[in-house]
Length: 293
View (tube, helix red, strand yellow):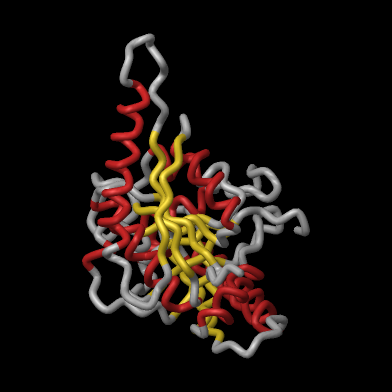
C-alpha cells in the first residue's frame, strides 16, 4: 500500500539559480498546504546517427540529470516529502506537463530566467510555453526568491477582474487559502490609461474606484469560507502606475486568471496578468480557464 502524499507539486528543475528559485517557492507552498514535491528534469533524446555509443551517452545524460536533481532535493527543508524524476522528451514543457499530470500534481512551479531584474519576474522559453498551454495552474518564482530568508506565506492576493470575459481565479484562490490557512486579499485594479488629472478625469476615476470596491465587497459577501478577507482597490493614471502603488512583502503570493483568448482548461497569460508579472515582487500563480465559467 502506497504511503505517498497525494497532494503533490511538480517542479521543473535545472541546476541553475532559476531552478533553485523554483525549489524555494515550491518548498514554501508545500510547507503551507502539506504537499509533497516532484522535482523533474527533462532531457532531450539524442537522434541516432549510426554511430555506436548512443545508449551509453544517454545513460550519462540521465545520470547527470539525477545528480542535479539530488542537489535540488537537498535544498528542500526537512519534513517535506520529495522525489526526483528524470524524463526524456523533445520538449521540456511537454515532458514537465506529462509527468505532472501522471502524478496528479495540483500545480507546476518554475523559476524565471536569470537575466531579469532581481526580485522581479522574467519569462524564458519554458515559462512562456507553460503560460500559454498548461492544463494545471502554473506558479512562477521571481528572480532571487531563493535568497529570501524565513519565508512563510501568509497572504494570497487574488486579482478579481471587472470583465466577465476573463477567467475567474477566485474558486482556486479560496481553496488554496483554506488549505494553507492564510489570509485572502481581493484586489481590483483601476486605471484611466489617459494622461493628465483634470477634474473630469478625476471624477471618472472616483466612479471607477467606487464600482471596483462595490464589486469586491459583493464578492467577499458571497465567499462561503471562514477566511480573513481584505478588499483592496489599486488605482492610478495608468495600469502600470496602479500596480506600482501596490505594497508587497516577502510572504505574499498572488493568483491571477487566464486571459479570454485562452482555451478551456488551459492557462493563457493575458495582458493584465503579464503586467502584474512585470511589477510585482511576489510569486504569481496563473490559473487555467474553467469550462464552468
